[in-house]
Length: 90
Image (cartoon, rainbow, N blue to C red; front, side, top):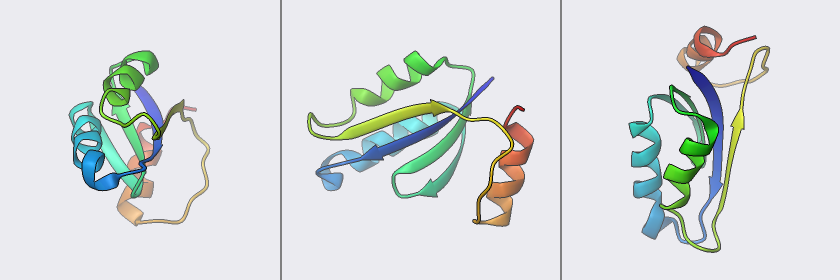
């Protein structure tokens, strides 16, 4: 299993947000950090994740998929922090 940070900025969120979020949720376990930032835990490789998401965004939108590992620092919901500690590799 792999853990990735997915970050996106949509020029027209009304047009693409639901499709992007649905695709992220379909990839595996996920946690939402902010409107356009998620962490996913998935068996898919990084290129597959990117290819699945990039088809859901517009030409002027931005998308990044980055591998993530521990340690990490953050301030957010306690359940998200707990989940990240469970799934992120060192």
